Length: 213
Image 1 (cartoon, one colour):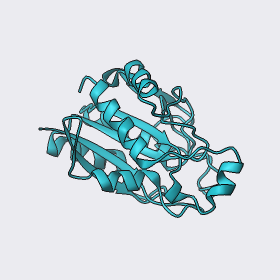
Image 2: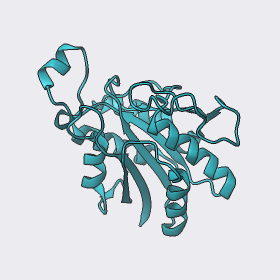
Image 3: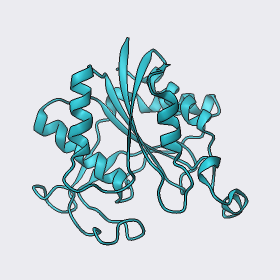
Image 4: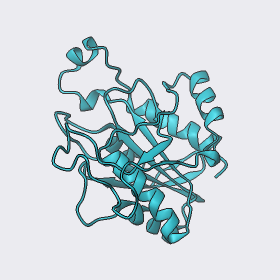
C-alpha cells in the first residue's frame, strides 16, 4: 500500500487544542483514500538546531512515502487553504517576537520567496470536489504567516534541493475546530469560522483522491 506522511502541530497561544494534532493522531496508522498515514506532530514553536524539513524528507525516503501533507491551524481561515509560497523570513510578532525579522535559512537572501510545486496535487480538481462535497475550501494563499508553518515550509523546500529528493509536498492551513476554542460562542460572534475535524479529514481524503501521487 502507498504511504503518505501527515505532519501537524501541537497547541499554542490561548487554544486548548490544535485541529491538526487531533486529525494527525486520529489518522496515524490508518488508511485513507488508498494511503497508509504516518503522522508526525511537532511542537508549535520554531526550534533551535533542528531542521524539520530534513526530518520529514528523511522519513519520506526511509518509508518510501509518496508525498508529505503538512497541516497548520489558523483562526482567520474559513476553509482548507493551500499555501503556495514559502518565504525565508520569520515574521510573527504575536507568537515569536524575539525571532521576527530573521531569516529561516541564513544561506539564502532574507525575504526570498519560493513557489511550492503543487502540480502533483491537482489543486483545481481538489477545490472543485471540496465544493461539490460540502467541504469548506479557500483559494490558495501566498502568505503563510511567518511563524512555524512558514518555517517548516521553507525548510522543506530547501531540504528538497539539498538532498535532491523531491517528494511531493503540500501545506494546508485549516480553521480551528470546536475542541480548540476556549470560548466558542465569542469565537463565532467575532465572525470566525470553525471546522469539524471530520470535515478536515474528508478534505484530506479528497486531496489524496485528486492527486497524481
